[in-house]
Image (cartoon, rainbow, N blue to C red; front, side, top):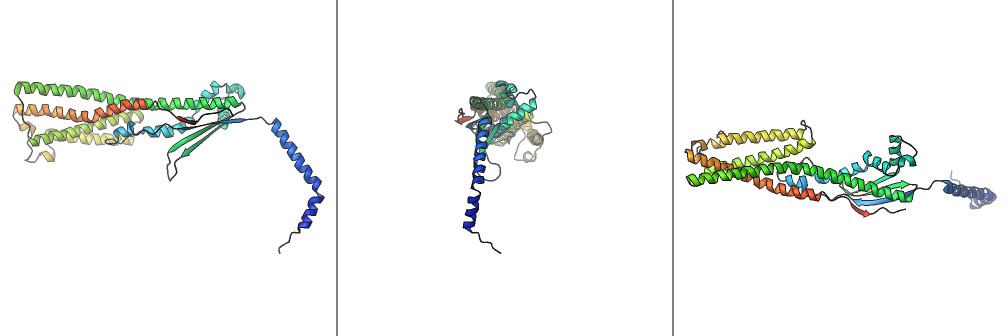
Length: 336
């Protein structure tokens, strides 16, 4: 059964209880005003920034055509940023810098960290879409009773995060650069030696003509040897950041062993492609022709390795400089 509401009756009730309603409103307002006067004031300062730009070169770009990279520089820049922002290390540096032990009146590390975390707000802005969405920008906010200190903490916090991020990125790229540089210098030395030997042989014995079938074999061997070097470099990089039992390392070792076996098979002429009568074994050629073919083979192999490793070495040198880029401030922290 529906009950009809008589507006006149409601109005009469309000009029009869007008002083009670007035008292409730008055004392609620007075109490709220009192709380606002005695409640400790806090201030929030915020800073908005972009993470370091994604690198199209770097480890991923350099090895994209030949290696499956185990580390992406862009992932390190983008996603490691959130880890660093929430790291205990940065919070401890803030506590020491601004003497929060005295402010929070405690020397207990866990209590200080908890208090610090309660005053930190981190908001990440990501691309739209489904699944994993890349990071676009970050807003970092800090709450404090002192407005100037709130802004100073924001600035200091992001400076420390930026410094750690740059250091990690540079360290990772330098490790890769050193590995590539070592192989590059080895290649230059071996290439110079192979070219010198071939040149001396030609001065003493004249220039021989390599059969097209033999050139095919040598070029194939050079391609295989270059691939072995590529896998060795990738393996050296992987071992810097992963354990020996890592499945990717084991896969690379397996692939490298397969190429080395193939290379030895070509070298000994035991591979099925070289058992056909259309190919002639290097070992069956006259002595001088065989020696020339071996010297020629060494030069071709080292040149093939050089074609791969020199561009990578130059890109790694460039990448070290690129890693100097840090976060890009959009809205700096202001005193609230």
